Amino acid sequence: MCAHATPCPDVSSEARDLAAVVSSHPEQGWSLLCNGVVLFDDDGELLPDGRAFADPHTWLTPEPLSA
Image (cartoon, rainbow, N blue to C red):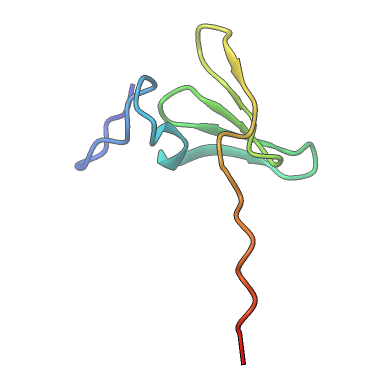
C-alpha cells in the first residue's frame, strides 16, 4: 500500500503505528496511516483486516531521585 521512497512499516510490524499519516481527523480522534491502520488518539489501533488493538505501550513512571 505504501509508495514512499522509504517504505512505511507493514501492518504486521510492531512499529506499524509509525507509518505516514494519509488522513488526519483530530476532531474525531483518529488518523488513517498509509499502511491501512486507523490510529486513535488513545493509541488504540484498528487494522485493515478488522482486528483491534488497545494501547500497546507500557507507560513507566520515573523513580524519584534520592538526595
